[in-house]
Length: 77
Image (cartoon, rainbow, N blue to C red; front, side, top):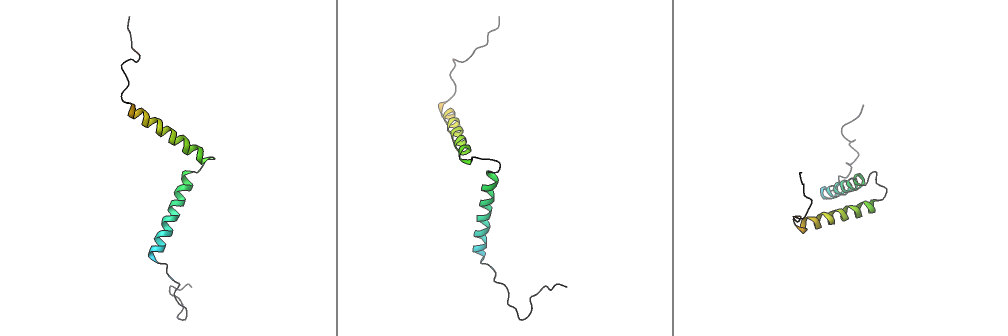
């Protein structure tokens, strides 16, 4: 059967510093996020460029103000 405690002659395995452990966990989480964000995408750079271009266009539309009154008009005869 298995023992819960180490043999009396053996020393305990070294426990990592809490700060080191936290840093490793944060690094692993960032790596998983990057991997999941790019899953299924062959060219990550082109997708990022498209996203930035789309954001730029949306920002220009938002800052240009409301559309002018000279749009299409409905006429009923």
